[in-house]
Length: 490
Ligand code: NAP
Image (cartoon, rainbow, N blue to C red):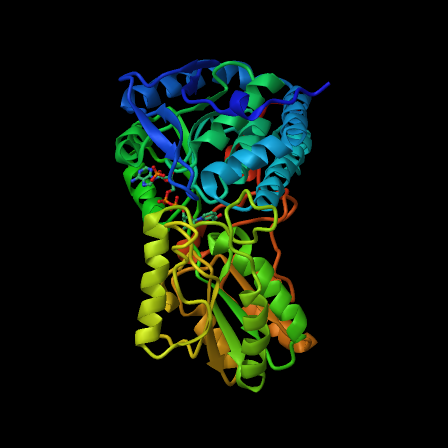
């Protein structure tokens, strides 16, 4: 029977290195707080370079043994890990909501989403094929085989504290890599719980190591991995600025990098769109996690013929969204992660209003609920000179830009350094073909707002990074190709 844990059993406050829970070497700790109340949930290990080094040492010792396990043995462990995650869905979902603030239903949904990657890569582990290259010379046999790249450092953000780390650890373990990981300061508890379940599932000591660190100590701690030649790969999800820093700083040891970075997703509604479907799709993609997702639409372009009708329909649905703490079963939007986040949203809205935007609904902090709440907002008459056009707002704000022609919409959508997700709604088959090809993005939602799936390649272009997570391509980032040339056979 797959074991179920109570919440207090899942809350871990130490690092997990070489199969043991150990405090940070200097004994330091930092507080993890509930974003709804500001109350402290736990005091967790505040690591230093020495802890990062100890994690790498453990991962290096464990690598040869793990690399040599049979793929089906690794698959069986991943499958058990998946089953444990699913069996503990309620408790893990509650833990996500507690430290990150998303409504309970979304917390549970994130657990299922994260677990789906573990199941997927459990299956993919047994399908890492190479090639026998057609013979080019007599007496010579040429083959390409795939090998695990080595130690992988995984660094993850706070917005999906379970899914982001699961979809890095699962492919790494599936390929035979060992892992050192650091979750975000705001949400280390879910990651620790996940690692505890991996250990319970039979991941051997040293194969998966996790250290936690405060924002203050994250830079020096992670730098140890960036400069350590034994760490062969960095897989990072987070902001573009930090992704570029990691690439620069690790260049001396020429690591393979996967960078899942920020977005500034356009969402285009053409005159010929099914407007109800477009409103529903926009609500689903924009307001998940209170708008704190990398793929959520940041700029909504609506063609002039349907602009006012779309704004009215959307405004009505957005005004009805329930904002409440995660613990309220009817909550649809929870608190933002921290003060910095809610301040940025307020700054973007204030700037838009100064530059002529019009509030359709929302447009204010909800201080009566707590310090980190912001009302779901729709702003009409958005213009390119507004801050929210250039930067990710990362909150529940929809700016509506008006456009006349398809060419104008595509040019505006692509007029950004980012290229993660994009969306458009149209019922015209030729336009669908043209616009899907013209959008500069790693992901295009066509008449669809919910695009993420473990079976699909997730990732961006331009300043949104490189590498793909999930799908049959998702293992490639953790493998290197070795060419074997055998001669003297004739
Ligand atoms: P972030 O500030 O870049 O942080 C991400 C991770 O990097 C955290 O663990 C953070 O630790 C760590 N970190 C920050 N500065 C560092 C440094 N100088 N050296 C080493 N580690 C460092 O991003 P965030 O605010 O947590 O997440 C939001 C961003 O992630 C948004 O831009 C969003 O679009 C992006 N995102 C992208 C995807 C995708 O798949 N493309 C998915 C989700 C989110 P601390 O927490 O201690 O600062």
